[in-house]
Image: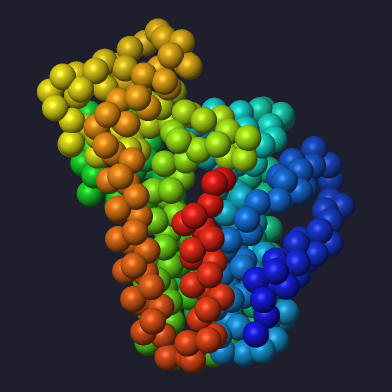
Length: 324
């Protein structure tokens, strides 16, 4: 079994070797810049870790693993444009540095490049892998559309939000795990259990992102704190707070999210103070634990020796206890 650190090293070395010599250079420069920012490499790591449950040598799967990372970054370029986000991983976003056109065109090219790397998947697995990948990417787009639609609605429920983040965040994590399991030769039952593990962990992961956006450490979070609040995003913290708040606090929250003119820091401070009073921090933590525990139940059902699952359990804990 590879260690987490060994797999991360292999992934980063593989990504670092990928150079793009095609022209025009200003289409590919934002791609290299975006990939050079690093990140947690969660999706390729999950793919390789799932494969490593069944086979010892996972290096042949690096191109497929990189395809998932490339796809993820394609969604981030477009997401940052749609949200007009200025920072990602502590650096200017492609949208901020090169503008809207680059975020669109370079993002589109990244999706095409993802398919290029997927084409290197072993022939006997390629069709199944493509089916899983295509379904995941479509669901990510569906989740993004739901997220956009929610911006114009005042009646979004917590359940609707959970379904949206399942599509927007969880399915690509789950697909990475399932593809890795399939490449490793897992049974259909194991592949499905690993997929469901990914769905549950993805929900916890996104709830942690919501939490950190409001309460994280700005020196390590890599993004400006309070971005969701400033942009009036329908997050778990907001929707759950509205369901928990008394009438007075609900009026205050709605007041801040319905005002057209405000100082960003004033709004962030006021809303986070309300979140504290309402007690939504504890509610969010409990929800994260619920999905995490459900995910571990699915992982426990996978029919490989327990010691082989230790790496996936460890990365789960690292993701859910992170500060960025």
